[in-house]
Amino acid sequence: MSKKIVQTAGRDNLGEFAPMFAHLNDDVLFGEVWNEQAIDVKTKCIVTVVSLMASGVTDNSLKYHLQNAKSNGVSKEEIAAIITHATMYVGWPKGWAVFNLAKEIWKD
Image 1: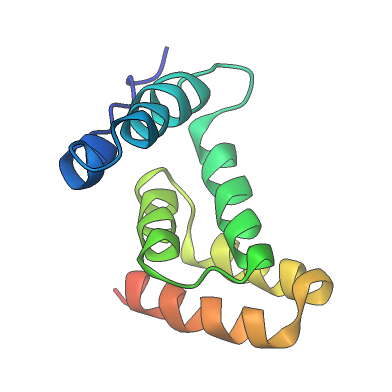
Image 2: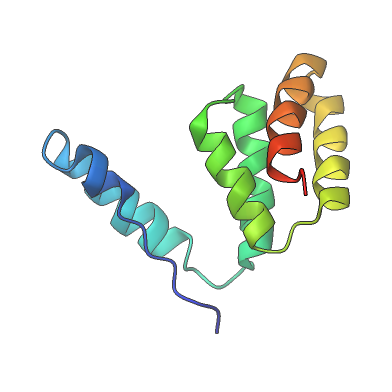
C-alpha cells in the first residue's frame, strides 16, 4: 500500500471563507479520490497534468501538480513525451505554456 495522501490546502486557504469547498478539496478530492487504489499515484499525476493542460490551466495549480508528478516518479523524459503527445490534441499554445512550467521543475 502506498503512502496515504493528506491535503490541508483547502482548509488552510479557504476554511473560514468556504468551508464546504475546503472539505471537498481536502477530504473528498485528496482524501478519497487521490487515495483510491485502482490506479497508482504516478498515473493519477499524469492524468491530472494532462487534464489541467487540456483545460488551459497554467497557474500555480498546474505547477503544483507538475511538481507532484516529479515527486511521484515522472522523469524529465516522460513529462516531455506526455506534454508533446497531449499538445497534438489540446493545442500548440497550451503545450508551450506547460513546457515553460515543466522546464522550471525539471531543471536539475
